[in-house]
Amino acid sequence: MLIKKFEEIEAWKEARKLVKEIYVLTEESKLKNDFGLKDQLQRAAVSIMSNIAEGFDSRSNKSFIVFLRYSYRSGSEIQSLLYVLLDLQIINIEKQNDLYNKIEKIKKLIGGFIKSIK
Image 1 (cartoon, rainbow, N blue to C red):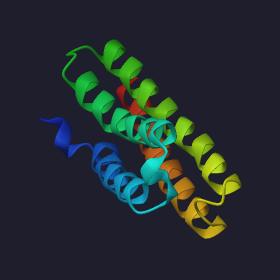
Image 2 (spheres, rainbow, N blue to C red):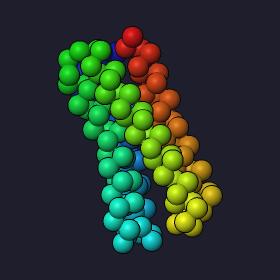
Image 3 (cartoon, one colour):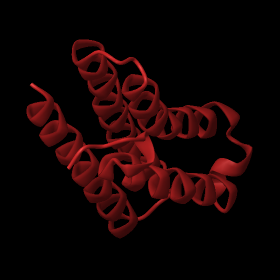
């Protein structure tokens, strides 16, 4: 299947869902007034989907892979930040595991996409 626009990329679709979930979490928890941590989480989540879109329009597989790797690393950043949220008792272990696994799925989609491009 030839992908004609970035919105067709499965990793982008899942990242979009994650962004919404992160924004809801940051507005409905103790994070609402922790502007630094809130901002970091939101930026990292948005970075995943934005880098996929930006890389797609680079029109070069080599450049696209660079952007996909940025997306992948943003996922790792959020996974690390989830431990901060857990340690500060902003989220419970179930929520941490749920979000962590969703990000792991996105990272696997990105990793598989990189392999398919190579």
